[in-house]
Structures are given as C-alpha cells and as structure tokens.
Length: 241
Picture 1: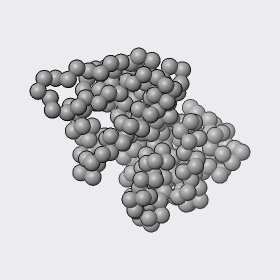
Picture 2: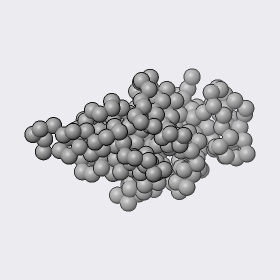
Picture 3: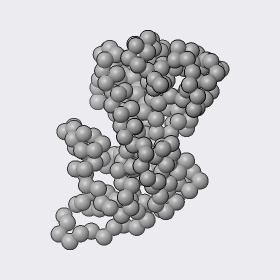
Picture 4: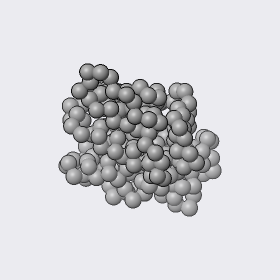
C-alpha cells in the first residue's frame, strides 16, 4: 500500500501529481470531509486521489505550505509524532529556526522543486519505520508504545515531534547514560552543523513536555557523560569530566 501523505495549503497541494508518481498517496486537505484534516479516518485504505471519500487512510506524513504553521498544534493533537515538513520561502537561519519552534520536524524550500522534498520525506518515513516494533518503554508513569508511537505521562498524552520521539526512544533503557556523540550519530547522522547546541535545545523541548503537568523530572543530564532516563539522577562514573 502506498504511504499516505497529507498536503496542507495551496503550494503543497500543487505537488499532489508528483507525489502520486513517486509512489505516495496524496491527501489534499481542502478535499477532505468538511474541508478539514481532522475528519481523516484511520486504519482503512482509500483512493489516493480523492481524500473526500469515506475510508480515507490515516497519513504517515504531512507536507505544509509556507504560512501553515498555525495548524501544526492540531495536527500533533490528531496524529502525535507524525513527520511534519513545513514549507519556507527562503533558506535563512530565521526561517529554519521558525520551522523548529513552530513544532515541525523539517523544512522544505519551495524554490528547489520536488526532488529535495522527496528526499527529506523518504528520510523521515524511513526513520519512522525504524522506530517501530521495539519493546514497551515504561519509566515511572511514562509509557511509550512504539507500535502506535503513542507517548503518555500518566493519563496525559504527549504530542512529540519526530526528533523528540527519536530522542526519547534512544533513551529507552532505564538508567543507562547515552552520550552526546551517540545521539548525534543516531539522530542527526553526525552532521557537523548539529554539534553546537541542538541536543540541549531538544532535551529542553522534551523536558518541557514531560513535565508540563508538574510531574517530577525523568530526563537527567549527566555532566561530562550525556543524558539518562530514569526516576532518579544516575550516579556519575569515577573519572568522568
């Protein structure tokens, strides 16, 4: 079955023919029931060219047009850690930062054409497939269900970005310390531009969501070693910086 990709906004919907040729099932948000993505059903297969028909499949990724960032919160609430790619008009530091702070997982540059977007889309879908099928993660009142990519803190569901989810999955072994180098290798593919403070930024984002309800800290910084997930701060090894 072709993976369904939801297209939000005019610029994104214009890419529907190319997505279909490339092996995806495009879902145009403007053609969905009541004109909104919130009506998409889950678990059933449907026609890739008509998102308004009954039985529309749940999307595995979302491509948003520039200026569609206000819809990201609703998309996260509906589908959790699904990859969201937000369009930008210019490849500037400000627009890249806006992509991350808006809750999207990545950007796509409208002026580059569909090839760059296809590459980014495949990368995120491959990462998502690798994240499935793992054991149940449970630390205290935190639960992660990899098969459905659901994360809960007690009764509260957490809407995580793909990178936040991958970071949490990497830290799934309770009490073990994961180094910055391992995080960069497995999540950011050792990209030199990511070595500055991107890990600290995403750790902060993840902590805010884990502790939003006033819960105790589970994601700990182990100075000179890395990060650990557990109900208490792990003991530092002797000789650690």
